[in-house]
Length: 298
Image (tube, rainbow, N blue to C red; front, side, top):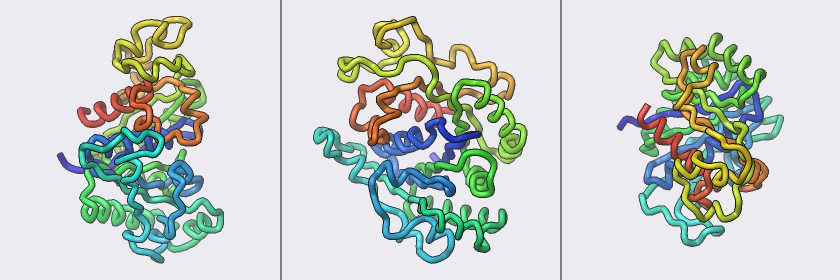
């Protein structure tokens, strides 16, 4: 299989794309893949706070030519081989994880915007080189990119270098209208050049927090969508959109690759990026697995 570059994007912030991107990358590595995760949400980067690592050099330094790629990519294997919160968790597949963080300081963001790399052509050149070096020098199977929301120079060019675009949104009129605008304005162009685009619904209304016993139980599709008791009580809820594509998906002609329910225990966790590794029986882990399968078979 050829290496894949996958970008998580959204019309606006608050869709949970960064949480999914981190869990997605970690689980891919846990499954034995060589994975790079880079934070190209230049204007509001946050992946570094998830992993609680303070790098000596940032992606900003590479992009403004003040550091080499080897200086800014961090070994993240500690998170997929063994975690202190779960000593029994080991990576038996031999996967690898590398992390690249953007500097959140306003002066560093401004510097990228005001240097020669701020033109669209220069940004694209930098990102093409970044992708090529990551794929070849680290021999990656997957390069995962977290992008800035909306239509800005850095996010558009991050999408331009990607093979798979996961347009993340929540259910609701604001997200739907904004997503439609994104598709009309830019995604149609990417599709013409071979990029595969999917809608990724997240924080869909359903159940908020599974019962404690559920974390130890079966996370099969039957358990997740079969009965109301498995969903923690309440009305029967059906989450699997592959049975009936959402109206927006039909209207745009873009497949909805997955629909992830809202889980408050993840949304408000300080270490939410480790959910799929620390709690493999959590229903959220099932949905991330489903997303991985969807991307690999699409």
